[in-house]
Amino acid sequence: MAYFDINKTNIQAASADPVLALQGYSTAIGQARSRGLEYDFAGKMTDNWSFIANYAWTNTRILKDGGQYLYDSAWNTIGFNSNGYTGNRLPLAPLHSANLWLKYEFTDSIMKGFSIGSGTRIASQSQGDPANDFQLPGYVTWNAMAAYKHKLQGGATVSAQINAYNLLDKRYYFGTDQVDGAQRFNIIPAAPVNVMGSIRLEY
Image (cartoon, rainbow, N blue to C red):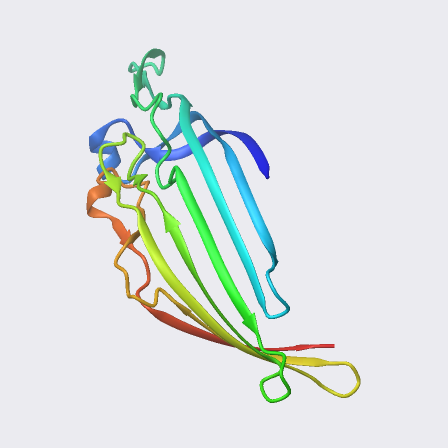
């Protein structure tokens, strides 16, 4: 179990001036905090079955607002245009997130070296922008893997693995363009179902 309390300054966000924001200008949020708890569990239920699970509760807040200083023709400071983000949640940071992974390793003579696994990732909704004007919905994805490991003469080990992600082809959203002033038009979808393979040699 871990407790964390992280403070960060000068986080990039769209300009408080909507005209400048649409032109691509950005500003810095004064200070933001990420505070929460994380639990990690890992172990073996039998000689064949193992599991990995974790859960995180992450409470984020913008503590000090950023914005834009206003100047006169002689470049003297005459005011400050606040973004109005103080007290809001940081974007793209779900309050709840969790992972669960189960793995089975074959130990009989015919299938020895093979293993299969499956797991899920869960995330609650998150804010789409620093103003908290809209939210990205929560999601659940299902992943799986299959692997084979073989020990070579001389002590080296070769392993091959294939991973499949988002098997149910769930449509969910990974993030938004935080520099542009119109994040609703720049919502980034996550990858659809995809498969990756790898071969590794260890010696």
